Length: 114
Length: 116
Image (tube, rainbow over all chains, first blue to last red; front, side, top):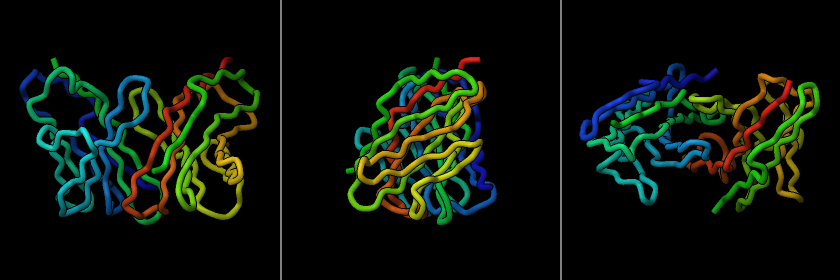
């Protein structure tokens, strides 16, 4: 079946630094990738939609300069949290979509900013 | 705009008993419906989807869901619950079929606890 690898699974960083999260589709080409943020015991909040070779489409209220998304190939998208602050601490999840089936999700990244 | 409602934040069921996790939706046009399960500190795992065809959809781990157009519902069911089924369950809807760029809209999630 389709597999999406997301790294790192956990990261702790100091306030003011930047963190990059990678999302890779291992056995299929993803036409579109999505980035979500999830707060404890809450649903997924879509942050942005990423298509290979084009700029990401951000949801209302999501700062594009804060959350940089790069989708350089059909198998890789990255989310960089720039100048991280404690309020950016959250669980970030990516998903990848191809033409065949439902979205496949990564295992998530627990970001803690201290 | 589409929306999904999961009216129960928490569902408790005894092991071996049938379980139901409720989901209702609102979407323009034909709905494409999904169920996902999430274990602690993990991403979402796909359980099943309804695109077209039979209203009763069978998925992974013995789960099934029934699409009811008149009631705009897509309840998740399992005949006999296992303790290992305890997790957070999300229903999702899209107005477009898989492969399109349209986003999924998720429900708020239902925490299922299966008691031994």
